[in-house]
Amino acid sequence: MIKVSEKAKEKAIQLMTEDGFNPKDDFIRVGVKSGGCSGLEYVLKFDREQSATDQIFEDNGVKIVVDKKSILYLAGTTLEFSGGLNGKGFFFNNPNATRTCGCGESFSL
Image 1 (cartoon, rainbow, N blue to C red):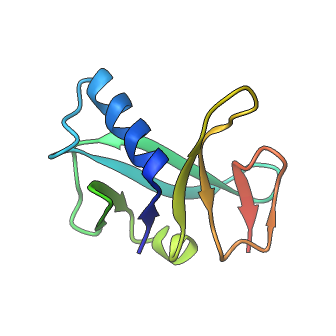
Image 2: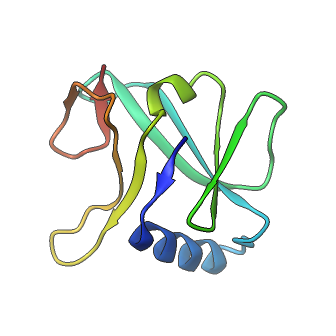
């Protein structure tokens, strides 16, 4: 399961609405791909299309969809948001990651 912090929820709903998505029906697609300075890289986008192999989670009023391959890397992860002067936007608090890079966008297991 993937959790969504309160700040991430607020920002996701705001950005989804601004981008023409309906937060009640549409979702955030989260995944993992090869790349980044630590070996694996997070993928995050708004989406409306779900495939048969996707897993869907809902936490804190936000729907999250994860492809079957990525779910093993993301189990127990929390989607967070940090704003402010040194904020980095959306980021993942992933208990499975053994190493992360300075930018927080890539990790390894």
